[in-house]
Image 1 (cartoon, helix red, strand yellow):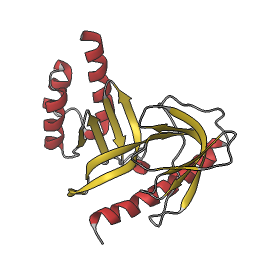
Image 2 (cartoon, rainbow, N blue to C red; image 1 turned 30 degrees about the vertical axis):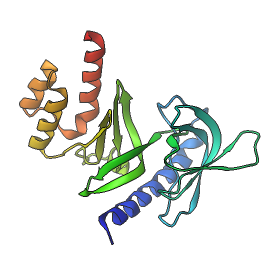
Image 3 (spheres, rainbow, N blue to C red; image 1 turned 90 degrees about the horizontal axis):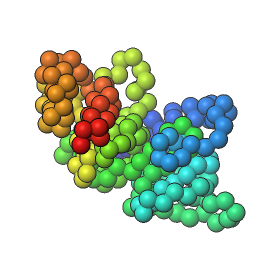
Length: 219
């Protein structure tokens, strides 16, 4: 079994946990949050292509347009089925056509052509990842988001996209500092803290946010 196939199965199990949590939370959360900030949990999907309901939400196409609909996910690579309001027909969109899926709790985006974080020599053509931060041209996302809220999480599983570049955020201190300094080293305070070893991978969201705010205020 290839590394990518094993990785897909792990991701499918993670998504199964998420949809269970979404069902519990959706009973308490009213309304729909769109505009790409938060969205509902993605359905759990078996690698066999099982169809899983996501409920009502919004999907975004690659032309940046958002569309309200009932949604179903068809396998990790099978794309998205959507039934728009007033229609009895379901439309099938491939991952080449879909940009994001949004419902009540989280936003999931399609990350394309990135190295398998566990097998850097294996390319992942397209996959849904959980949005952590998206502003100023920087998209921070997680491919293993079920562990993000646990006390022992060390930042493993983060992907940082800027332009066409997708970087796996290293967890090891020296590698992390080198990557962060190459990206954000022109920020005096961040550079000082990184060189002093005061920042870790699990603080990547805060690092990116500080940098983007600084850039927008000073440039």
